[in-house]
Image (tube, rainbow, N blue to C red):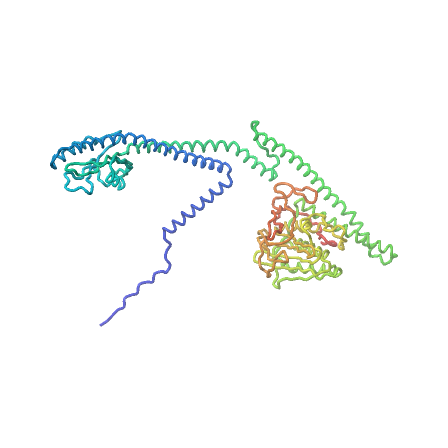
Length: 628
C-alpha cells in the first residue's frame, strides 16, 4: 500500500495588515488635531475673533438664562391657569357623581351597571378646553361587587400614581396629582383628580377624572421654539454688530502694526492712512509724525555715517603712500642704529616700533572699511583646522614666553576638516590668542580644537583677570579696552575682536565670549563643517563649569555666567558700530540673545555673509605687527 503526504500549506505572513478602520480613525484624528491647532493659532493672533467670540458667548449665556427663566414662568402660568379651571370643574363633577351614586336605588347588577354608565357619561368629554376621561375602580376591600373596572379613552388604573390611590382609599374628599398621560408613542403631562364613592350594594369605589394637558404642552413647545429661533437670530445680530464694532477699532490697530513692521524692516517712507478726527485718527496722526521724525533722524545719521566711512577710507588710502615712505626711512635708521649714540639709537627703535604700530592700525582701518562697504568676500577651501591653530601658537609663543604664559594645544590626532578661508580664520585665532596672552597674567593658556558631525570649534581659555558682565557685553566693540590704564605690550589697534566678529559673520559661525572676574575668560569660535550650513550646536563648552568629552555636542542654551558677542543689530536698516551708523545687509545681522541657565546670558553671533568682491589688501590682526 502506498501513502502520499499531503503538501503543507504555505506559511502565512506573521504581520497583519493595518486595519482600514484604524487607519481612517488615525487620519480623522490628525485632521481634527490640525484644525484645532489652526483654531488655537487664530484665537491667539486675532483680537477681533476673541472679541466677537466672547461677545457671542456671553450673549448666549445671558439669553440662555433669560430663556430658562421665561420658560419656567410661562410653563407655570399655563399650568396654573389650566389647573384653576379643571380643579373647579373636577370637584363639581366628582361631587355631583358622588351624590348621584349615593342616592341610587338599584338592586341588581344590570340596573346598577346601566345607572353607572349613564351617570359617568355626564363627566366624559371635553372639559375646560382639555380632554377629560374617567376611571372607576373598586377598592381592594370591596367584595360581591356589581360594577368592575370602568374607564374611558382606553385608560387603565396604571396611570394613577400609588400615592394618589392610597390617599383616595384612606381619606374622604377630592385629591389631585400630576401624572404622565400615555399615548401610542409618547407621553404628555396630565392631571388626575380622585375621590371615594359608594355604589349598591354598599360597596366602595375610587372615581378619578383624568385631564390630558397635551394642548398646553404643545403651546409651551411652540413658545420654546419661538424663543430658540429668536435667540439664534439675536445671537447672529449680536455677533454681526460685535464684528463690525471691533473691526472699526481693530483694523486701524492692525494697519499700525503692519506699518510698524515695515518701518522696522527699513521702509521708512511707510505711513498710516488717517480718516476723520476721532481718537484713532489722532493716534494715526501722531504715529505719522513720529515716523517722519525717525526717518529724518535716521537719514541724517546715515548721511553722517557715509561721510565718516568715506572719510576714514579716503584718509586710510591716502596715508598709505607717505606711510610707506616713512616706514622705509624708519627701517633704514633702525638697521643702522648700532652706529648711533645711545640717545639716537633709542630714538630709531621707538620710531620703527611706532611706525609698525601705525601700519597695523591703518591696515585694520582699511579692513573695517571693507566690511562696512560690504565688499569683503571669502576664499574658502576645505582644510584642517589643527595646523592653522599650531601656526598661530608658534607665532605667538615668543611673546607668551616673554610674559610668562605657556600655550597648550589640545587637538585630536586625526585633524578637524572644515570649509573655511584659512587667512581669515588664522587672523581670528591669532587675535584671540594674543588677547589671551595680553590678559593672562602669566598663567597657562589652553587652546582646544574639537569637532562633531556638523561643526568644528576652537576655544581659547586664559586664567587671568577675567571680565565682569559690563565688560563681557562690550568686549567686541570697536576701540574698546577693558582697563584703559592697563599698559599694552603688543601695541594693538583695538579693532582685532571687531574684525574677528566680522570674519566669523562671513563664515556664518558663532564667536562667543565668557568671563568671570578673577577666573579668566574663554572665547569660542564655532564653524559649520560646510560653508553655508547653519550652526545648531558646538562641540566644545563655553564655560569651564561644563564638563564634556571631545566631540560631544553642546547646545547654545548652555549655562554660563557672563558671555557676550557682537551686540544685536536692529533689523531693517542701520546699526551702530562704535558711534557711527552704517548700513547692514540682512544676512550679516546678529540673531537675538538667548537665555542660558542659572540666570546667565549667552549672546551669540550667527549670520551668513552676503558680500561683493573685495580688493586684495593686506590683512592684520588685533595684536602685534603686520600680517600678509
